[in-house]
Length: 341
Image (cartoon, rainbow, N blue to C red; front, side):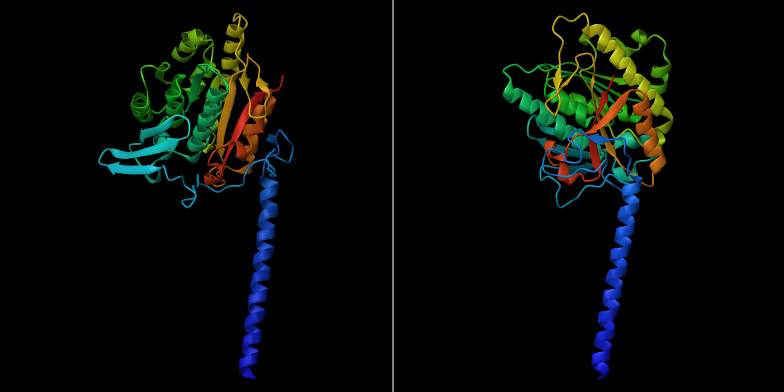
């Protein structure tokens, strides 16, 4: 009899425990849904066009998490006394070898550009697949002009360079600039487009009355402005003082391209993932964004997207089914920043 009572008591304890876990999970899901910004939209509404329901943004934690069980087999890391080398395999441009000079665990807030974050992988897989499809569907691939703002180690820039694009990579971290230039040179072929590396302070560039004297804008001038602007994991608490300057900088890039495209007899329109065209006068802006709940409050997060909306822009979610290996980087979202006027 005592044994039966003990068994029943344990069963009751298990049922009560499971009930409490379910209640907690429900509370957290409600809290998480209330914290999600509502400014980001999906082109197809709640459905992403791939048979999946897409939230405004994926809920995340502090860090750019990578699922090791789903990590592509092509990733190969090698450590030496000078830092860490990473080789990443892509379906279109082939293999990219990067020198990081450090590991992400030891990277300080002042030198976040010395590590590869998940948004760089997501963005790189996306643009590699985009240009690979373009190459298959057209006889002659258009040489894009790519501007990478906050390039860090330059994974996205290296992919663009291997595809033969004209690449202008920028960063404000002097240590990152050294590795950025090294990585671009390592993954660049002389037969491809032109590459260059510049130091760029967003605030200083935004406050500059005459951008024609800025080396970045001066180089973009000869290409007709940027076709693609890459923003890979540049929105977090440490960059908050420069958010307004970044949006002003995007407006200046658009104004430059608009001025130059009006004099271009054959304007170049870029195809979006939803089969619509980016207007020839607008840069195609991609933002790789990873939510960091401890690093940024929900209010901070909403503030950035509100600033975008006030500037006449919107953030459109790129469905995960359009991104190779998207399931590997579960906390990173790829967004298109579009002008709505």
